[in-house]
Image 1: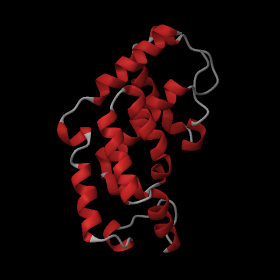
Image 2: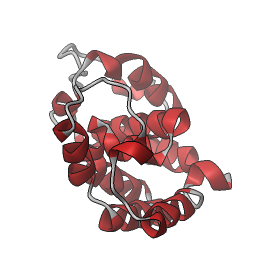
Image 3: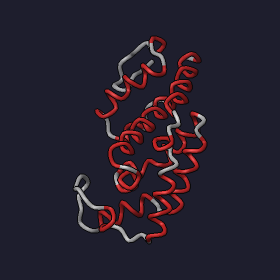
Length: 164
């Protein structure tokens, strides 16, 4: 199989878990826009690994504000693909409350550059009600409930690898 860098690898030598480990070590060498060129099952893993990293490090508001927010439709699709419909629906609801494109546009219109540090509360004009609802929804995501979405991802990858 053609790998991320264009080289050939024997994907059958990997389990879903091992493949995620390999991906997580290499995906940062590529722009997010390049991820869209990867095979669909690799995209699923890449977007979930990226989302998990951002969510663990900074929380949902940073995910909405940063460039990853533009890729939330792919992340929602990835959750659905592995069978995690609950987290897909939570993210969909968050996106219905506040569009990541709107949040990102607000930030950039205030003169920030791509990697500037900002404070979400002072940079956006969301009502307390919307902020509270987003926080409530974030508390229901897998990361805050102990749900093991990784098992679903690994099992999905195991099935895809065996189909090749």
